[in-house]
Length: 181
Image (cartoon, rainbow, N blue to C red):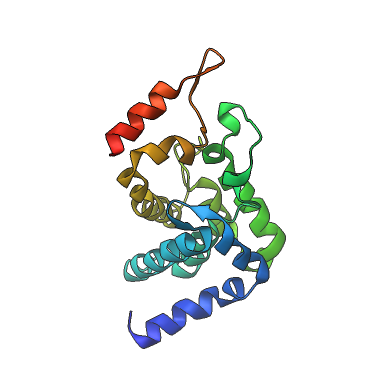
């Protein structure tokens, strides 16, 4: 990005970056980084692409920055949940609610759709706007880093251990670990 483009990018996102609530996400794990750094990376790439395609790059950039703005570090939560209550299925809705709570003045229907639908197809409704589709694809592209270590995949989707018929089955996790070695 040239100097002027970079200045415009930061002008769009500074109200969020400067808030204490968003900075808390520096402590939340996400893949091999923090939620803060991951969202910033998704926002930068989204800004570049959406601006070059003459899309609503301001809404796309804000939505990209807030797409994983969920309320707590889910990887530290030890409570067992049913399959469809796992992080991958619910965090987009949680992020939208948190964004509405903390940044309502920056939201519009497009930004909310970007946040809420970025996990499609885990969220059953597809994105409505081109900007929503773009953030979904950028996020998935950047998130592919989890495949560098397949043993971490069960944990990432919310499974601490694989359970079959109520029994913990470490064989599946061990197989994933061997595959990643």
